[in-house]
Image (tube, rainbow, N blue to C red; front, side, top):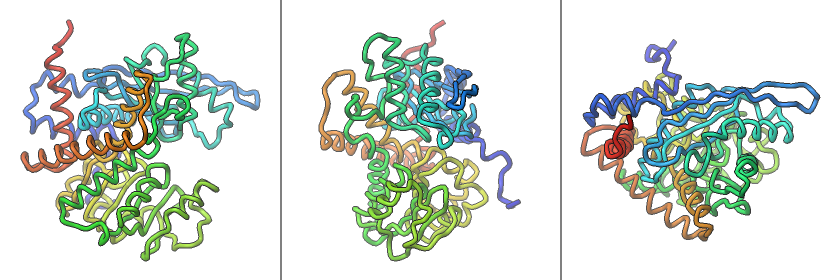
Length: 421
């Protein structure tokens, strides 16, 4: 075992609480608010019986956690993954609370998950799981209650099934009940690219703070899903040389710079980097330790830990995934002087444009892509500087500053509303 490794550091809920405690202490949060904001408002676990195509019956487990409704309806994705746990969903719901507050959109935090492997399910089985899960959590869903979105293992089609199931029970088309839908069903232009675009904006602003030129920088992106592909493409358009990208099968690298458009075309055809023979191959672990200027962990949580943090060589980390860095690794990155744009700021482009989609659905009036992009730019730039300015003012890391900003905004609203008793 690495002597720096911290036992239990991979629990995302504990990692969230560790950062929350530091931020709450810096804010001087009173004991009562501390207890309220640290505790999820509601947790629902449901059994999902499904008739499989071979005639058998399986029972899947689903979760929906609403961490906070203080600032508005709960907002957060639904992931279909065999490794989903209640603690993971709790952590993700809390992160959504702080994330929505950091970019100052009127949502609380929620998250959902179903323990299943979408790659082993037929389309019909996936639809049955989605609809039964939706029906099971129907009482807590709604445009004014809880608004899901896609996450790992789900997409616009899954959101369409959720929207349709909810609408059948409501007896009217309720497009605002989910975001990340197909555009023809009330989705927003720019939503697919939103998280990657937000990451690019944060990287650009961070480079400016660091006095670095994009054209003189290299980058590696862990994750070749939607977020990873879009981020890599945008970084390339900025002039950054992207030298590595990975997916579950491993990483491809080329120190001369990757042809991101060619890689995206390959992924569109075969859905994996496996078989892309135009570059050298390395492991996902090796990709994280490449000698690059910018590292974008955009795959899943807990990829940078106390075990590998000492080996990172990047000068700037822009977190595309939720919780990619453990709390124990934070100290190591701080000591190394790495500028970290934390997840609850960096990947908030997704929830921001989800907010735009929700607003457009409720108005029944839709914006062009340029307008969506302009509004996203304004919000992300403002949030970036709010966080970095707070970090400097309180002499804390960007991550703790982001938590402080989010917690303070939720605490302020909670004080105004008071406690119903």
